[in-house]
Image (cartoon, rainbow, N blue to C red; front, side):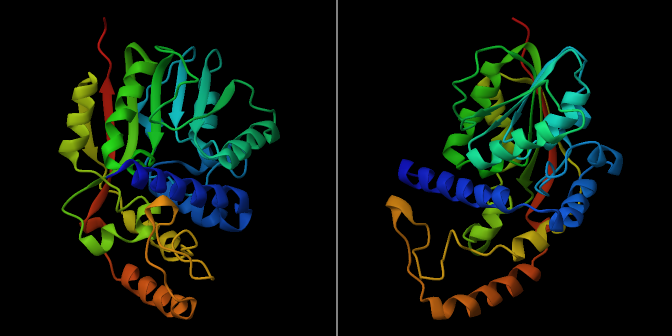
Length: 302
């Protein structure tokens, strides 16, 4: 993928999730809770964090395998509204949780959530950066790095950079605990090309062997990749409701956009096309193509 195409992908992801953060309301809380609970969060955990922290975009519970200790420093890659940051902060009374996200409105939401908690959550920080280059943070500052259904959104040719950054940021002996979507079989081209399925963390999923190779090349040891067997069709409601503004606007803007151009679609055709797409996605069994996986690895001692 060219750098132009990579930039277009980041713009697409940031635009969608930025708008999602800006419009997040309690009206979606039931759906968001059902997604989170289906991937391992308890109702008690979700009730313990600020409203608006859980945006229904999890594909696992990375904290379940992080084995946090009270004094440690944790970094969450792609923190969103702060779900895992706030849950971790409660377990780190002498430590700190740092959320990293590239979308300003997500960071604004996370900071607002921290301030609105009762009592306010103060042992947290939020940093604006792309997870392929977290230059604001120094080498070797983290005991644990987690991420929840975010790395799949990074363009394939840039995913190795994520693991190199994780390795750089971890202390010697530090650990990575990630939840992410990986493929179970080859994803068909029509699924790969659906923007809603990409934003919905399906069509950007990598193969297990790729993930393992990238971690080994970064220097990680003791790698474990485990299929949770969770039902990822729980995402369908959100994927089907994807409005496609980033792909086709009411004015017939170009698919893809940006410097890479795209295909212009007549606005009169947009509604029928959206209905056809919704029908096609509804008939897919997402579990055939992708699964939710737990990924764990250790940075060796020097």
